[in-house]
Image (cartoon, rainbow, N blue to C red; front, side, top):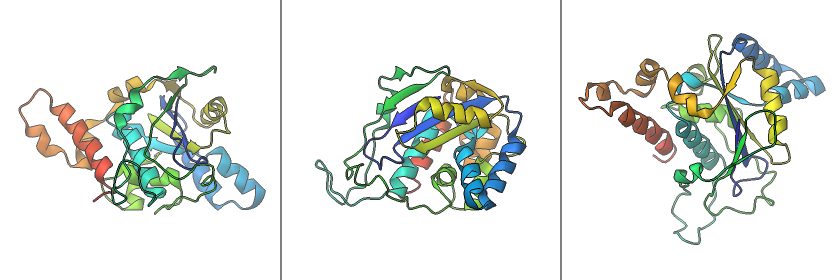
Amino acid sequence: METYTLPNFPSDYSTIHLALFTNVTNSPQIRRRLIEASVMEGAAGDKARAEVDFGFIEADLLVSKEHLLTAILSTLLYSFPTSTPSTSASSSDPPTSDLSSLDLSSSILPTTSSSTTTDISTPPFPSSHSLRKASPKTRSHNLHSELLLSLSPNNNITDSIRRHGISDSTTTLAVVRFGSADVSAEEVCRGMESVVQGESVGWERIEGFTDWSRVDKVYKLNELNALKSPDVEQKKKRAVISSVAIKNVI
């Protein structure tokens, strides 16, 4: 599991955890838990929702880790809009982030699972302390489902959940948690592993799981397949990531 900190977003949502699982055997049970938790009431419902408070993403449709990180950043920028002017840009400029900083130095957390933590620089934003309890502006149920919408090339919520969310046949699963630094990475990792029955693997393996036939169909990349170029796959990756990055801008 990897952990990223975006300190200029509200602190209740500024710590991002992402894990990759393969050989997942209980996808139908996870889906059932999500559905049942969404309609349960009272303390039992709160507990059930807390136990599955993650974003479950079909990893076969991810072309790289950058693809997912771009969607995460896009989700946060959409959900926490601000008119606070940057000290280095006009107030009319939309907030942006340099994704190249995602590969900067990281440190290994003291945990039994492989976990890394990275601090990502983001544009000026109102104090995370003052915005700790800020509520995200979402078009869907919460930030985790909003992330599925950010990954989708269209704005159909049902379609984004069907294509990018966990299905009964999912065997390779990306799991994401938007949360607070008050909850340790070790605790989040244990929570993920208690829900998902599968093998936790490093994100360097993600590109080996990409189902390009599905990616071509979802992101409409078939024309690029006609290119007589040895770097067609790299061109398709850039096209997918760019489409996610600009979706909420245009």
